[in-house]
Image 1 (cartoon, rainbow, N blue to C red):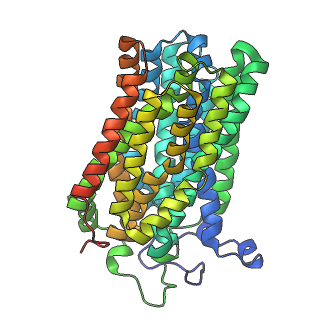
Image 2: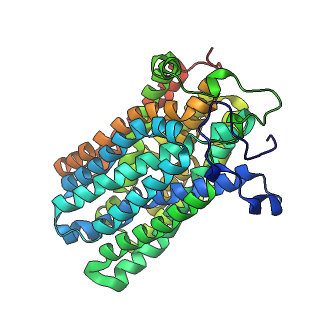
Image 3: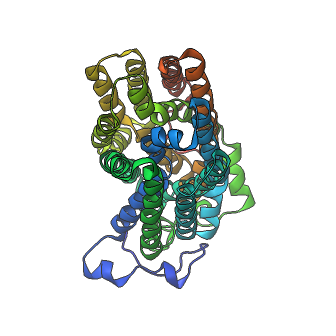
Amino acid sequence: MPELSGQKPEGADFRASDAIPPFSVSLGLDYCWVVLFAGTLAVFGALGLGRFGYTVVLPAMQQGLGMDNTKAGLMATMNLAGYLALSAIGGALSARFGPKRVITAGLVLSSASMLFTGMADSFASAVFWRVLTGFGSGATNVAVMGMWGGWFSEKRRGMAAGIAVTGSSLALISTGFIVPRILTISGPAGWRVCWSGYGAVTLFIALIAFLLIRGHGPALSNTFKSPPAPSETAVSTLQWGRVYRSPFVWRLGLVYTAFGFSYIIYMTFFVKSLVAEGGYSRAAAGELFMDMGLASLMCGFLWGWVSDVIGRKFALVIVYTINACAFALFALSSSPIGFLASALLFGLTAWSIPAIMAAACGDMLGPRLAPAALGFITLFFGIGQTVAPGIAGAIADKAGSFAPAFLLASGVALAGAIGSFVFLPMARREE
């Protein structure tokens, strides 16, 4: 990394609050790692708690609000619709106002809406607050994942994005361990206690993000020995066109749709299926959810590094194929060994696709436009994950089993592997 400074980047919106805090210098830290730490925590709050925390509390929340599987899927869909709405413009907002402001605002919104979710007294009010949680999650995640093009070189970009997504893994581990115990201790109101706890933790993370995240990163600073290209130091109308007219970005978005659709079915109904059909208690299902989180701790780092070595295209083909196998195994298994194998397979690849996508955007469009590109392809991802839970819940109610829904997820993941191989180029940088 280049030497860091608080000097004003040419063509960038710089403020005194973007200067590198002196404690990082005194500790001998390259500040990119401090920002990576803050970004990982932001993912923990916005996605790990705001989105995936729903999975563990779902059975208790269904009982408390009288929801069937169709309504449970619809609630997830509305949360993801909120995510979609803000992720579509979150990258552009981050490029315009800076990731710090967007991340902090998104986390505060997520925190408040999770607190109010715990106070919901009807299905309709819970849906409203889940939509707002989705707004905060979408803005935060796109801004976080779009930062790494500015803070890390191309050779480390996939690794950095991979580390950041482990925030979701940490959330799976912590919620899988803690939530079943809270539900047991607190009784029928346990799911409300859980949402309140999610909100309080996320608010604390918002404060950390506000204090630690600075600027767009040194890749956009004139502290490079050779100055950055004009296309990476200012955002003009022509440059926005580079994002939205890029054939690569559109193909990447289409491939990303398959991940959004397939993984969210698995994650939303993982615990519910184990409890309703797999013979698991809530505590045992939570432990398996925690095991998945443990398996996923290194997945982003591992597959980010793999994509740095063999290329984003082939890494995506491998990961999508593993996902397809995990989803099919979960649908077809009737034993704890099969469920465990499925959870571990998915855990080994869980958050790798978003990390690879973030790195690919930085590769092809440069650090300044990477957040906008990531926001745009997240629109495709968001469409997939928005429609999937409602469809899966309706299929489960109609079939009397979640197996057909998980098989659908497997087929879509396999389509993602084929699409990655057929549609994505080998090139690193679009001219």
